[in-house]
Image (cartoon, rainbow, N blue to C red; front, side, top):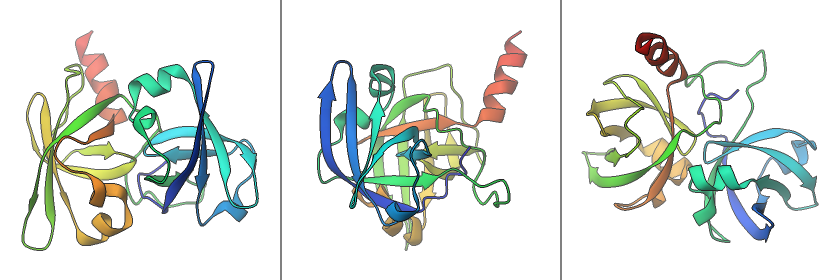
Length: 193
């Protein structure tokens, strides 16, 4: 389980395709603390550490993950948001994030708002919902929804988040990973019955 509080930006070192899978080599500043089999959220996608090297580690994404997320579009040298699993004694500074991306969204617009930024996103998977002042996870970042419609929502990004995540690289037309609030998903399923 994650909280959506990004620890650091990782850099994609290599991308190797084999069968229906893709191996990503990732450089990061907490490499020396990692162990094989550990789960790390990469742009919000929970992936398992498969190999450890002196200056990078590897993870593997299967075909379903590549089809449901923006990981298949990554390029060598790009920065991704990284978060290790929350320890049992840790704080919930964000919200409950599983690392299971529901779908991708597209950035519709970015506007500067007197020292912060407002990002608007659209998504086509209508079974998911957002609510104003509810939680959403974008590329692994826990955020509060500002405005919400049936297929779009906006979030406000403060300078700290802008500088310490890959939000600074998101522009109109960029694809992002979306994980909708798990409590909302359970309530929605119960109400549908």
